[in-house]
Each structure stands twice: as C-alpha cells, then as structure tokens.
Amino acid sequence: MRVALRSALIKLLIVIGSVVVSAAALEGAVRLYLLMHTVYDVEMTRYALLMKEPSPNPRIGHVHKPNTSATLMNVPVHINSDGLRDAEHTVARDERYRIAFVGDSFTFGWGVREPDTFKARIETLLNRRYPVEIINFGTGNYNTEQEVNLFIDKGLKYRPDKVVVFYFINDAEPMQQPAGLAFLYHSQLVTYVWSRVRALLSDYGDRTHNYKGYYADLYGPESAGWQRAQAAFVRLRDVCRQHGIELQVVLIPELHELHDYAFADQHRLVMDFLRRHDIPALDLAPLFRDESNPSHLWVSADDAHANALGHALIAERSLDFVAARRTDGAGRAAPADTAPAPQ
Image (cartoon, rainbow, N blue to C red):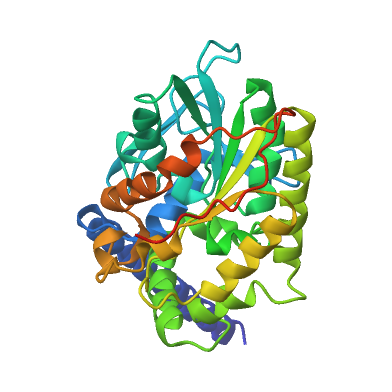
C-alpha cells in the first residue's frame, strides 16, 4: 500500500514538475518574442503594472503613480509629480488662459510621443492666437465617471478657465474591477494568449464579444455605465458652473470604420443628451468620414488608438471649437449649436 502510494506521489510530482518547467519555458519564449514584437494587450498590462496604483476614491479606482517613467508601445511615457502625463504645472496661475483636458487613453496619448499628442498640438496652435496653458488629465482605462471624479479631486485646485472632455465610445463602460487572479497579469504568456483569443472574439465572436455589438450595447436604456456617465456629465456641468469654468465636450470617433460610421446612433444619443443639458459639444466623426483607409491612423495593426497622424487630425478638426471662449457673463459656456459643417 505504501509502495503504491509513494509511486503515485512520485508520478504526480513528475507531472507537476513537467508542467511547471514547460510553463516556464513557454513564458521565457514569449518574453523573448516580445522583445522583438509589440503587442497591444501586453503593453496595456505593463502600463497598469508599472504606472498605476489604487486610488482612495472608489469612484476613481486607480490613478497614475507620480514620477514614474516607462517605455510603452515603443514610446517613452513620463508621469509628473501630480500623476499626470504632462509637464509640471504650478497651482498658481499666470496670465495665460488655462484649459484642462479630461479623457481616457486617447487623451492620455497612448502609443504616441507626448509632443505628437493632440493636447500638445492644440496647445501649440492656440498659443499662436492667445497665451494658453493646457493641463492633461487623460488616463488610460477610465470611463466618464472616473474622468470627472479625477478632475474634481485633482483639477479644481488648478482653477482652469475651461474644461474639455474628450469622449470615446467606450467611456460608457462600467468601472473595471480588479480581477481575482490579478497575479496572472505578471505572466506575459497568459496576457499574450488572452490577447489572441480576445482578437478572434472581437472580429468573429457573438454580440457580447464582437466589438461593434459590445460598444452599441453600452448605450441601452438599462445600461448602468451609460446612466453613470450621464450623471457624471451633469455633475461636471454643475461643478464647472459653480466655479465659473466653461465646459465643452469633443466626441472622438472609433477608428475602425469611418465612412459608414458604425456608432453614428450612439454618437447622436450622446450629442442629444449633451444639448439637452446645455453642454456644448462637437462630434468629430462626420469630419473623419472621408478617411478611406482608417488603419493608417492606428498606432499598430492590433491597436486602433490614434497614431501621430490621427492626433494631428483630431487637433486640426477640434481646434476652432476648443479655441472659442464663449461666456454668458457667469463664466459658463453659452448655449450654441457648436458642430461645424463637415468639410
């Protein structure tokens, strides 16, 4: 009996050892592969591990670690002492007009060098019209509720003249909760395999996993994420009015299909909501419909974030809207039909 038990235990240990050695070998092989290849999901996981930390505010969830640097998507990224991907900004004001940009990974400038971001480009172009300073609160993996709460927590102390929210289709997602198996994020093998599975589901999966169905369903009448996004917009509007800050919203298009835009209905829904609540807004999607080859605006073949050219077009096509300083005497934007005609 003891001999049989001992034999079975030895066999089990051999199997476990073989699995561990094989997994380690595969992990090593994937890491070597990734030294020569850039994969979006792996880089986004590295971003979370290297540059994020929990926030004490449950409505924010996570924030950037101050004074951190990393290379992500082959681009240097630096986070300043206030946890922003930006130069250092003093709280004290000078004579310049001060604007706060609020948004997600597009506003953060994912996959693009900081001087090539639409924030940097708009700041340069606006300074040819009047002295201006833009502070970038863009943070990857944020929804609208997180963006608004980050600005309230960190942005109000800068006393901006204007807040511009750059809104993307997935900003109506519910806040992502930490996974129970978060330790697996440290395995690039697991992240790489999941990225390949997710890519297949995004293109060929059912409505829940296909990116078009997934994004469209975020705006259903019972969608908790969209309801919270609407409440966050109203809260931001009220906070801005209270502090004499002008508020604008710019909708950034999803960059897979631009001519026959897949999310036109959802953009109309957002624009209608903003107009009803006296929040001036610009939808950029109609201004991108003549882009016949959207993938040339992508960071990479597996990452449809805007590249440097995409950021240049966003800056160019939102510049006049952001540049306008319309006030009604109470420090808030006057109602206006702000969307220009497509060019």
